[in-house]
Image (cartoon, rainbow, N blue to C red; front, side, top):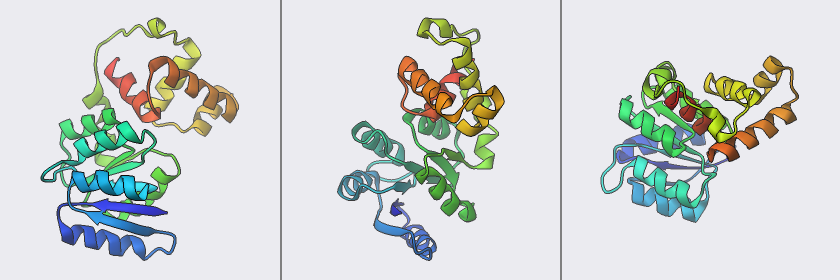
Length: 206
């Protein structure tokens, strides 16, 4: 698993590199200190996961995430910060970041990287509990205008509640393949990139 670490605190970047490379299946291909280097290194190394701080000089992690995701829509970006700032959390979700963790929780970083690499989206416990409140939007949204049917809306709600495809299949008595097909249809109809953006969309339009 190839990782890039970008953090303007060189000591933090070095500590993370040491922690991660204790694992034989993890290779830290490069470390950077700002968003510009994140964009450069991402293009050069095409990592499995980019682990990046948010507050950095020259270009912050959110701006770098936006630029990288515009060029590489499937990029796995895991944002790591000391700030549980509401504005940052919402922006990270809207951009399509695969995770947002607080630096204080070092023990969760490697499991989070593995989860993101396997296609999951991860957020620290402190952040997950606040998502509904942060993303709450207008009431009575008309999903019919997007041609979303009742079954698809059920799946959207379950995704927003953090359910995996397997859990959704069990809840609705469907096969995993059928759930995947529904999810593809939902993403196309709502013009979204991934299940994280589906959850964001749902909470914004409740």
